[in-house]
Length: 131
Image (cartoon, rainbow, N blue to C red; front, side, top):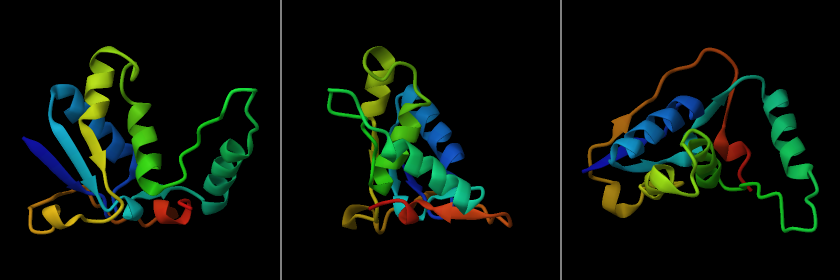
């Protein structure tokens, strides 16, 4: 069974932890509207953190790998909440998660689970960091 989650106005960390738990249970998780997911906090501090990670120069290897699209930023957050994503149950769970920046046609009419919450504090959407 697939769990379809609408990311509009959902907090990044809460959504990522929920998706990781469901994938570890064996559920297929599809997240749509990744551009609308929000990160709470001061925009200046969040921007500095993202720029710091993107500005690091890698070694002779090709890296560091820094996601630049909203769905890949979300997948990276989910990956950090799974046990070892390279092998075992973490690898299996990570493959069960699919992220889309918009709503694909096959999910337009399907009932979606919403994790939206209205935040009164400062926040910024993933759309602002995706390039």
